[in-house]
Image (tube, rainbow, N blue to C red):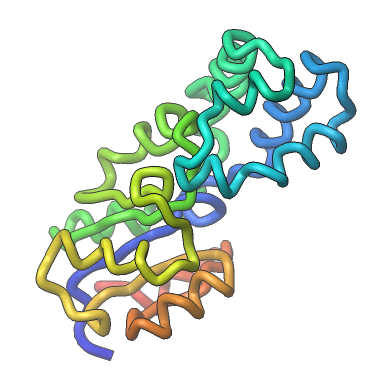
Length: 198
């Protein structure tokens, strides 16, 4: 492996845990639509990839469900309040990012994300990174090869000089196929020790 010149992180379940708060907002939306959580989750599964690639807007989806967009957004404001958000940060990753920042190494994040979640999650994390790549802006989502190629727009790195962390094996495999040093993240106290700069 070449000496790393850039580190790139997934966000969900690598920098920040999303399942608990996702369940909360889907539960709230289910109540607004007189659905069970399971019914609401099934509706979400049908469209989340379209939301993550920017091919469907929250407003259009809410309308198709007969929902009130203002109420949907109000529930996001409540569920994703700053204290709730901060409670789900992954401390081992945050500490490692801060260590990398102290060494002035370029840092980015690459995430599959819906546009409506950007202000609640990603905007709050951008101060930690030098660049970001978001699926709804690119128009494709991991593990599509095109989204990984975006990394190389931000610096003259070779794939072998990039380390990419993701919790999903298929995303790791796709990055490896492009020559990127992709590593599947596991939230253990010593996970980042193997990458220590000291």
